[in-house]
Length: 472
Ligand SMILES: [Zn+2]
Image 1 (cartoon, rainbow, N blue to C red):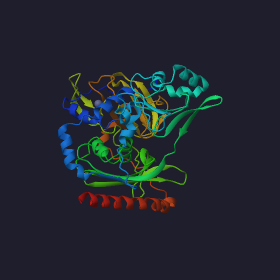
Image 2: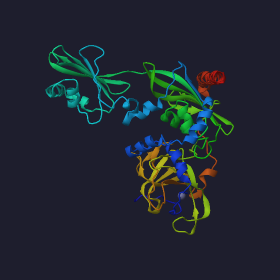
Image 3: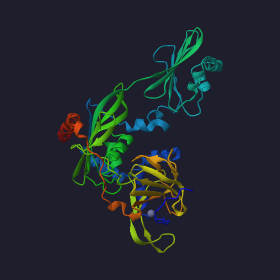
Image 4: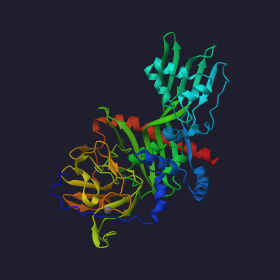
């Protein structure tokens, strides 16, 4: 790349070794990670089933510590629903054979899409000729949406008394249904979107093994767990500080259709107790309409820098002025910190800044260098690839995903090499005192209190109720 960082001392390529013992850690890390590529996403789905029997035993013993409820007492294993985008596991068991049912009315037919099905085979299963497929596809351009079939999807047919197709409809997601109705002019296509009701829900969990497992058992979706990690990401280092017995309470917006949770909105308030120290966060939308998280006292949860640019990673090498280089086998300074995590794990910008480089850089492989104001600079090496829109000369926001863990350049396994410079001098990012962001404006203090206090009170009350009921 042509854009060289100016005034900085040269950045020396370094390489890093993944300890063999890290493999077990990586397996459990895989449970926590939400890679962006399709290939990686499948890997993650698989690894969700990698819990060892020993771990399960421990969890079952401790299961009584974990309780979950919503304000309408609807239990929700809805992580499953959110994971269903690719493989639709919740309907998969219904799919071994296409079932033609005739329970509602004599002219009603239902068929479940299974492997190898096309619209023609499904039409044949309900006794419709292949000409009916052509007729419906020809009558409305949008009707071809019916050809994008998913394994486990249900198609419902209504036939006329003479056996012709009079209507067809299918639910394509929890929120969307497509239908086709015969009129005098042919078939008319319609897509119906259900608007979910939004309510606030409460969840409480105690960490016994990993955050992701405890959160999942408490009924939290992956995205909600990620949100919680990013709310507390400035204070809690999820890569190295999580301990057994840490606990959390979260009030969040839950989207519901017909009593069934279909997704979640933002976290409204949360508490996280890490090694005996409790952090509280409240979401507040100011008069300009900007939302951010604050402590109960109204200080920003946001710091000038995030403590760890990768959630749920393991530190595999620390900052040091002299260590043996794993490939070169010579003593070399390691002027950064290495975070080992599975390939494809998102890497976040530690702070707002200007992208000095998003490209190849010698032994660093794919590298991003960000300048934060005049004083600070961060470097992210060995990336698998860059996030969309991250370009040399562009800007990034704090917490924005800039790329993904990889092992490009001189590297022995997937990890992030992270460097932090203050006025051109490499410093240990883990040793830095982090500058704080702005607290709630004085003019909005009262409004903030008005919104935050009921949320705090509710977390206290819900937790007390749940703990009391779980002891009974
Ligand atoms: Zn390194």
